[in-house]
Length: 468
Image (cartoon, rainbow, N blue to C red; front, side, top):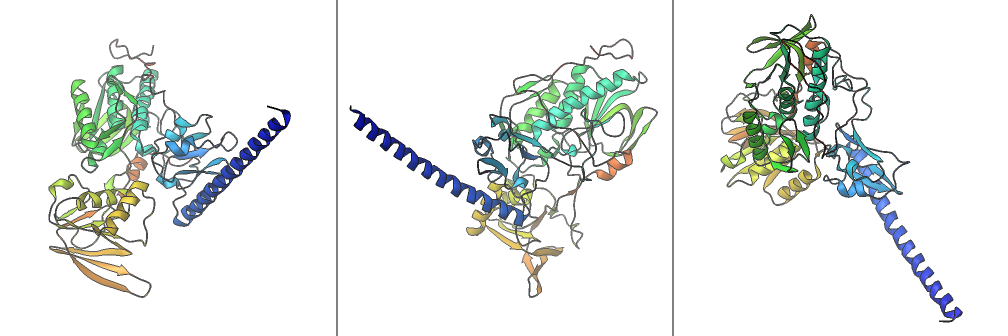
């Protein structure tokens, strides 16, 4: 090939490359414009800010590879603008942290961010200790709403409590640790306490499983690879609710963990270096305590006439047992949508969803899509801007608010499910003297293939405990 032909070929290649570059820039610009529009929409809807944990992007480190966008299982949380990842709908983030795992340059971290002005999160040290010495918090109550983090924090809190016991041992007959709550954090803490040989007890007002047990039937739960003390790694990344509860029950029985259901924590205080828990069965004295209560607390009532009727419920246990009924769902969150769609799938049910606002906020993307699908197919009747005024046998009375007027109307009804949130156990924490707001812990956890550290071992010589 002569020089002229080579030059012509090089020119063609350069031309094609320039066309490809222009085409790619056009695609990037369209994607940027799309993401910018979504960010503006998120700001309008109020979904840009996260409720709790959310991804934080280091714009200097980010290389715009979009691996975080592809990894996120929740649609619309992240997007790329001018070669840098941005948070779009932060409220959709539920803390999977897959974005953090997949980022090749460490530009993404899932944290609680700056909570200095938040009064709904207790101050915690890096060891998960509250402002009350010897009193620790693990799991959702501290702001991290994810099972794998709860499991990790339950273990970490026990390690810290064991160190506290070693530094200042109490009377031989006194419990060294009281764990309150038997959800993921409480189970992990109980296993670690058994592993370390601590004198401990675990109580819960409900049955084993915590918030997970209250999930709707067959709800898919993301756990990801995580290790439980004594048991080892949970190899599944996804479990149905029933599978996870069955696994936990098997583990608790196998290791003979001292977990007592039906005992509620009503108050407490710090006294002479110990924690006194006031419970429904009397006072329990322990050297240290871990609160693994969750944040949902007591279901929030509407405060309307007839709410005490037996047909009114605040959680859906098994949708498959309910057929051929006229059902009202009250609420606009993920729990309400999941209950409404589950009930609409059962034979003969007529499901109505009442929500006091004119649009739904902070829904997981898949729940928003399913609700729209069910609404369009008329499997669920959605009534926005409505409130329940009263509940009676065979019917409910609602009020529809419009710009022109407020109008009352009635619906035939056999069952009412109220998902208006819950009152968190903050008053209980205040009674202990726990302070809220200010700096707190960063998320940290061992690599998935690394077993929980066994850096603290309790050796028995009478009532003494030591660290090795």
